[in-house]
Length: 378
Image (cartoon, rainbow, N blue to C red; front, top):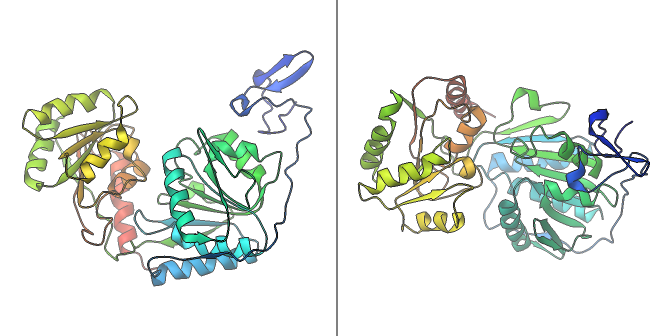
């Protein structure tokens, strides 16, 4: 037996219902019986007068990759774009999107997280004219059958047995829940009728298959990525070192912690020293409001889990990684966290500190990778 959706062959995942077997490995995306006939269809749209605009000029590095993506699509090649945090990787796919839409073909831009999908949809609607753009994420379903759709990875199940996409662009492919999720990756593959572009700031060697890897190692403002500084100490001193750094920096700070219970613990600790402190985690309410308060200088510190690891831009913010020896802080996570600093042209530099009781493999690899990217000439 084999699931026609996720290709699972493990009998432990199959269940018999009224004489028919269905797959429980991908049941979250509605039930699929093993004898279901499933086919993803192609569709051509009437050519429209579609245009797009940017409110800035692409850098030479951005333009080079943008042109190469169009050439790769024309040559029937898949592409990976390793673009460092804050390099403007979203905008470099606009020319390719426009090229494919003008062929009457279908495009999907997908991201793992709902919040980022909504933000991306707003940005792209602002830039692209002459086309209706679909939006699908938890609780939202607009223009599902549009020629151009922006959605979460989970919403791709709607298209796997319907009309697929000639071009699929996937951002943050190394993030939860898409990374190493066999079901989501199978659904993505099934929906992709043509070719794909995958974007990330942290591709590793094992992520690269037969795609062409394109590297953008400079942020759009031209400054280096901030290289973290490791501060080794016994764990009982970590909160005091964090406090000392905050006092010395005199700027907005995000303190990343590996456990939810540490959020409230450190909030109380910093508040004892009269710092306006908020918390962000899956157990805290109004996370977006908390972030907005830091942006508007109504908070001095946010203590956060890795929930704010990606997709966050706050001008002139500094970062402290607390208990950096924890296994949660691997190379990818630390690179993404470091990328929260120095994202704006007005404040293109900043500090990243990792407070840890030991120098882990993830810490060493993170610092090594960032130094290499800063020195690379591409």
